[in-house]
Length: 223
Image (cartoon, rainbow, N blue to C red; front, side, top):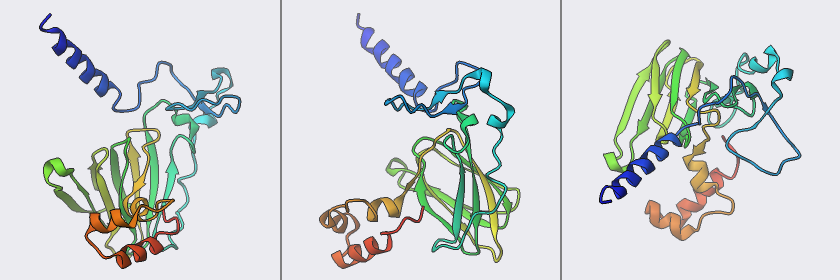
């Protein structure tokens, strides 16, 4: 009986590991379909009748065209997550087309449900991620050129900046059909309703005027 708590611990760890990423599919295909008659939202989608599935369900053409980088960040992400590409449902992957104008920035952000791999197709990108407090918030950063690949571990804050004089293009692959996105500045200074000024001034050790200014900058959606 003295080994029973250890057995429970091992079982708990195994269960936590199994639930860390998208679950493995138990069927060949499960093309996502919205079931408007159901009020239940689960991690995934309802499956289309396999007899009604066609090759078109596994084709996505949304990454063909450049994104519009005429915005304050000079950056546009074109998503191919399960909501845009139903054929990805239960497969545990998704993609993004990332377009950068010269100086364009994908600002510090995190994906809570997926590891990210970026492949540079054109241009030069400065990329990096920061570890958690556990590893003293260490920055790992590199300059990437055409054909280079870099990985951002799941959940860690990371960024990409076009440091070249021309447009840059990268394709991004995630280990989840819906990796999620938390843009740090937007989340902290663009929360609705706003986070208490007392919290932000103390957390960032700045005057309330600075907080007010930053909240004004992020009153728009720049995702």
